[in-house]
Image (cartoon, rainbow, N blue to C red; front, side, top):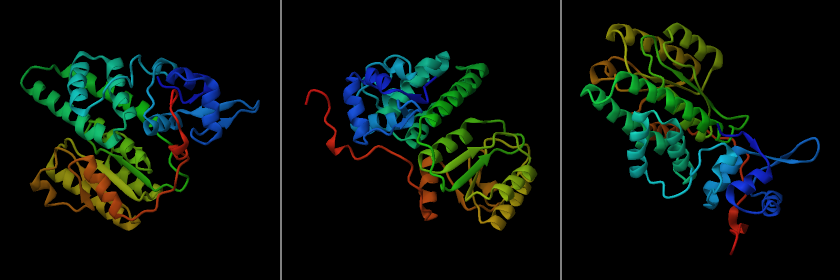
Length: 306
């Protein structure tokens, strides 16, 4: 499990530089840091990761930060990572899954691309293998649980949203137990600067309407992987849309169960085939995002040995 707060010494060990150099970078604002009551520096892991992604600095001791060994070392391409991840998921190798996903993130890939171009593709392939008998049900379920846990760690590695960040909440309706898609939305929106929370799976429409009324988010997303009957689902969606309209909330839908027949009978603010579409939609809302704390411009940063 990755650490949430680390010391300059730990970061120095992790990236193979002197502690004195690390402290100088903190003093220059290249790495955000706070001080304990005793005056000791503490660095949020989100700031450390932002620094590594911006500077291109390699991790030589990922274990010091709570990551598996060799994380962030070597080339992390989408195509290669997708193949390796498929093998790791089918074997249930959670450590390797962490290594691959964080390797991509540290290499500068966005959460959106990791989810759309790697995770979503992998789970479509797992689904096909399941249908053909190449993968057992338990392997598919285990893969979902592993990735959900890794996404939770990835979310913890992101900078917290600003105090005035727009709110987004989302969930699935009753008879839809699939958790992965709604978790991917939450992490993607968090990286985009939103205060995003998934409310889980299997929610009655009435309680989701209550949540929209009380929280009054700017956006509500509904992940739709399955439903018991079209009639019931259409009725629930109409209820959600009316509630969202009354609070000025954008209702966004997505998921493999939304066929054209169903979509033509419901109303929504946007339908998204993938997370890239979702990010494109939220840009149309013209919401001014707050600026979370981040490292200063790296123009003065000089890697060791230069």
